[in-house]
Image (cartoon, rainbow, N blue to C red; front, side):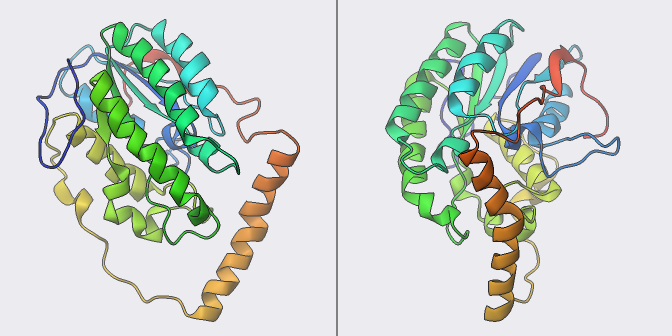
Length: 270
């Protein structure tokens, strides 16, 4: 098999991929990582820039859209992505499903594996990622059990399908709120930068920037009253609108198109 689940310190041999297609939701679209032109960068764009150094004819497309659930990512996005004839596909999804009460991680994993199998059947390598650990996150922490079950399935899928798996659950730096935007859902620029380097190493390469594992310098912890005030502000500004959209059957990604729908060269601003 071309790919393999990365475990412990084992690192696969890197490959000179030439046609990389990224599938997913807001994480892969790049929310929280604005570019100089007003658009979004994100970990996948940054990974593409790193991979482009190994293939002079490298091209990249990003079909991810914020708010997308797994049935779209593992369905329509794969349909479109296969038409681009990629040799590397990253597919990260399920987070928007796991957040919903009653989500079934077993059913989500089965749907994802069917999609990954379709991609692997074409000969394309596949990069997946586990959820990050939501411990300590207000409200979202309640989904930790479902997320952990889903994570276990992802390891099994990667092993059966010969896919690469980036273990975000193990990234201690993601437990620092400075790696996240104020909405506590989307990564900041620094979070995206570090995850891109982690993905690059998951694919077998050695990152010149080796600092992605190193925690940021400690900062004073907020007091109880400050934390309570911050949580109230967060609930009003971010949680309430999210719940409102769910009740109305709407998504933040409604009427939004993929930012890079066709393969093209990687820009220089990543």
